[in-house]
Amino acid sequence: MDDNQHIEKIILGIDPGTQILGYSLLEIVDRSPRVLVMDVLYLKKIADFNLRIRKIFDTTLRIIDTFHPDHLAIEAPFFGKNVQSMLKLGRAQGVAIAAAMSRDLSFSEYEPATIKQTVTGNGNASKEQVAMMLRSQMEFPNEPHYLDATDSLAVAYTCFMERSHPLADVRQQLSPAKKKRRQSSRKAWADFVLQNPEQCQS
Image (tube, rainbow, N blue to C red; front, side, top):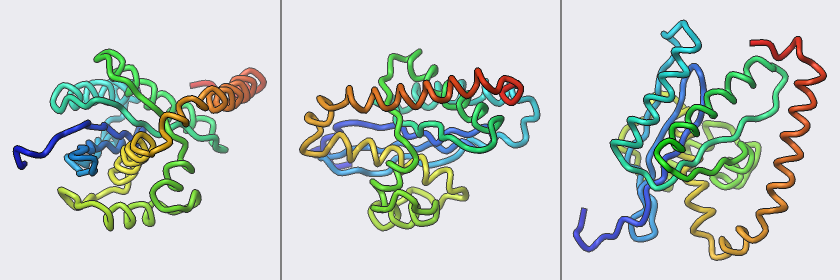
């Protein structure tokens, strides 16, 4: 790296999953994003779910301690028909956030549609379209074998775009309304769990 270049921030992006978890590190140099790391944590060979969760926690800590990112950007859980899958995904996200908090790392979460909209301009874009758009904008350090890797990069890129936007400060001031909508969404999920306890057993 040129000595005159200035590293402003390193964003850790995580696409949570209990089978394959994508992670990436986006380095911001002179206000331009550059991919530092992009890879996946392959968990399918670990039969015990609790061990998978522990692996996610330990790996997130290792990444943080190795690269010292300034912020964690993570994809938010989404509502789906398979309740068990939703619960497992939420646990994967939760332990990654817990690992970040244990290192005093700030974090933000982004809805899947928001990520796709930011990267491609289409909130319903496919994983392949997201990967293609990212490839057209940045050089990858290695060719990803799984789209979970590029999904994690998309999360980090969304965070970069949000924070580098000229109206970022205004958006932060408007965040209470966004938080209210998110709280409403979480209340709806909590109500669902209370009304359908048999579907939400581990």
